[in-house]
Image 1: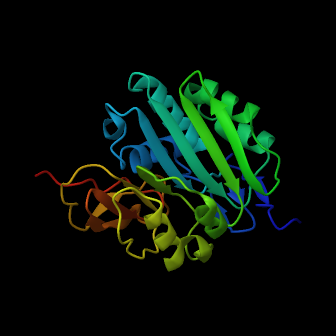
Image 2: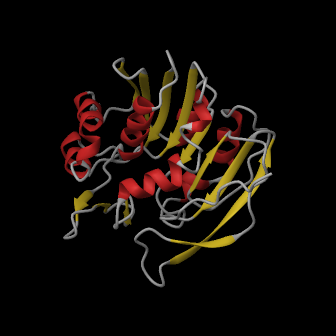
Length: 255
């Protein structure tokens, strides 16, 4: 086993799992619904990029590429005139293109975006890999390396961030305080990043305050089917939505 092998396998339910971390990649009920609810809606997409000529997304945890395919599909549908989307994603344990293709095949509506992504899927070689999708005005830089090394080397600034690593109990490096500090430095409008042990979605969005702690229905979670999510502090126009795996997001409250 290599140091970068996620030890991926497909369980009887057809969902991919990482044997290395003992965790799932997305909701067992519907990974695409999770991506749309927690990450895209949580970052107020597509409204957040309305009228923008350039938009930059930072993602920690590339995984199957599902979030990226979902974002590309939404961008293609609601792209500002002449706009360009650049995505910087980080992955320490890259699965094969064949495995990613098997996972993404569950959502035929993403087929053109999944196929384009798989056609440029990199070899598991450490470093930065650039992919270009001019038909949709999208480019992707994938950092296959330690998250700290990737964030330190990247010189960009993100308008929105997807934090999509494995469970903090199983992959604590992704959720360390110094990693959040690096994310804050690479994010427009953020001065301080509050430490968080939770999977999160976050985005620049509006100046409205985030809503208070509340329970929300999980997407395919086990147990009683409920988890808690709590918004963290926001700084300038940047806010963080702390939400455990498989949550619908806590959205900003109305003015």
